[in-house]
Amino acid sequence: MTVPRRKVLAGATALAALPAAARAQQAVKPRVTFISQWAAGSDGAAITGLGKRFEDEGGIWQHSPVPGFTTEMMNKLRADIMAGNPPAAAQLKGPEIAAWSKIAPTVTIDSVVEAAGYEKLIPAELVGLHKPRGHWIALPMQVYRINTLFISKPAMAKVGASKAPATWAEFNELATAMKAAGITPVANGGIRWDDGMKLEIVLAGINAEVYRAALMKLDAQALKSAEMTQAFAQLRKIANWMDPTTAAQTYAVHLPKLLKAEMGMMMMGGWAQGVIKRLGGNLDDILIVAAPQDEGKPCFVLNADSMIFWKRPEPDLQAGQLLLAKLMMQKDVQEQYSQTTGSIPVRTDVDLSGPAWSDGQRSAAAGLIDAFKTKRVLLSLAHNMAQPNQISAAMIDVITDFIHNDKASPEQAVTRLAAAVDNARG
Image 1 (cartoon, rainbow, N blue to C red):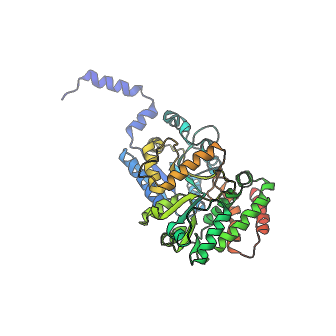
Image 2 (cartoon, rainbow, N blue to C red):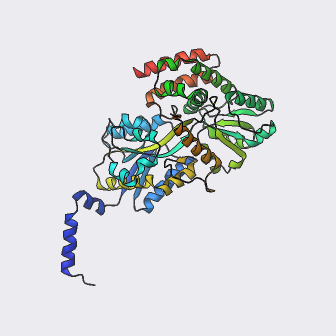
Image 3 (spheres, rainbow, N blue to C red):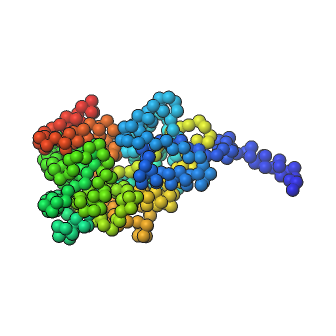
């Protein structure tokens, strides 16, 4: 078919009227370069699923995972930035978003966030972390409740337990009964963040406001408080109930024993649900509830995985950043992501009543809503939500040493923790 010359000219005139950047983005295939820790397991499967969706939308997905602790990923990110080659997007969270945004220019995505109405759909506590100087430069992807307790139902049956422990005294009573029945009471990992989580879970379950003052505000009085000493005393009991041979191993090595009732309880974020399912385990064999809370009020220790967007001059990367941001905010994308990992979506308008969601996820979502209402949402120290990495790392060093050194007293640990904070702050 021959196209009339006047239509060709009209089309050319309309194209010329578009802004140069818009014309450039229309002419390229969206591409994104991305680095994260997510190399394997349920997190690896979820990010692979996101990449597939990105490709289905016409994009090119280039993910370079950096396995290990956050520090390893940050070292790679810093090297790329110093070399003048930052990725288009990178995994980053909490106060690290503000700190790292001072190192290299970031992309302002206010317009795409506003168009999606996203700010009104997510927890208010997360907003400031992702727009540290008044502009959106990062987006949260998923939320986890850190203070979650996984209990083997067959292990409960062996000791005649009919309900989850609501307080630390009840937890200790159940753990003692399990020990007497030949069950290792606590399934643990041997990695530093796992150690750090146990202290924060305990402290949150003793006094939420002391947690906020000590771990989030680094208040000197709270760091040396009686509640902090009490938390380390409880941590010593937990350490004595763990497998002492677990060193430098992930918690997941013990999940088969938890499912077989050879181990009784595990304190872990909701991501363990995704790992259990990938191992072929039945979540119906596990009771998933909030960790003990002596104050008798809802408390939610929050961890949120996020992505930050770095400025790049290439039109295809710019187009890829916009496409990725739009996808991350979509309800169906967040649903698929959380159903893979065991998290709960950042969006608060997602219905979790369907069969694709677990009781543990529904429990976490309800706990988050209740904790928001009572202003008892806390940010995780072990997962770099409460403090920048250098402060978190210094504090976790003290916690890890305490767990593996049974000669250290709770009082000594409190003194060392306060000193570590002072030294890290310089």
